[in-house]
Length: 463
Image (cartoon, rainbow, N blue to C red; front, side):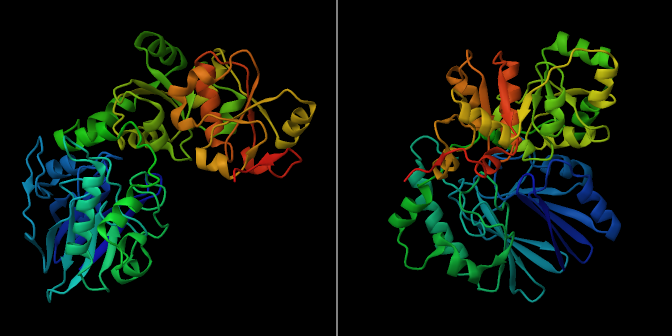
């Protein structure tokens, strides 16, 4: 028996590949399924099952493509209703995989169909728990995403409390917990950077598993401090539940090399959004007018999901040569399937063709300090409210990037805006969006708040 955790940092997502005696199972696979198939072929194993812990909201699973390509059976927990062929497991149902057994444990609360999968070894001893979004390392799944009808967030939190205490906490302390997410995911609020742990450690250190915690305390603590979920979450749930286009078709459509002339024509004729995924510093020095910068090196997919409201928006890509397929794939992971081509040769080819170019003024923290001292500087802080509260430039306005689409009227158009975040990634995203919407006089502060705080610019923290 072998368990492999396949962790994708940009999504803070863990998929699992389990193999025993020539048979394999995949739990919560990513959209691109070739790596799982290649793993199985390399060791001569047949993928028998694709286990889904729940209808994921933060990424599109590869369950449908993987089943179609391998003949594997898709398994969901009790109550799941799908638009494709799937086996809906009963609570406690066992699935034989080589010499081991995988037992479905219905653990509703994050969502009502949420199910954890307990791996039993050849002797029937529990070895590992694939807990999905029910139990994280240091946290539990947020209970506000599946509210329906009369079922409130508090109701779901109460159901989650019962699931944890009746199904998970009674398991042996040496069982290894393998969750679907780690730190950085929007599916919880207090996740550890660790991606696995023993259940015994979690009973000691996870606030939500305190033995002396009653249901009312659990509900209060779990529902306090939840950030607004990204707007694309419901659309990903729908795709995972009802079905979606094959990843092969998505990649073929998006991986179309376009000359500068053809790229410009498509942009003009289709209404496609130009998405530039280069580093913020490279983007600032020159970009195609009206394009949006969301760097591939940052939390790319979640920011795309937060900032581009329509998953069916057609996209044209500008990226470093050689990274085109990566960009299209990472977009598809969160349901953006309508990339229609990329600029062949990258931005350099656009410049060489003599096409129009725009720029964003960027200044160092030291130069900003001089301007601030001279007075009358409009500072926009696009970090999250809790970051702003912990320390901010005196007089700065907090307009978080997460909500920029709703906050556009609050950005002054008659003044020069000096924009910053923590380190420079988000502020360039914001600057590009502002310029694309007619707020042209923007200045990016290089190094963000971290660099400014080292100058003589006065900073404040809320008590």
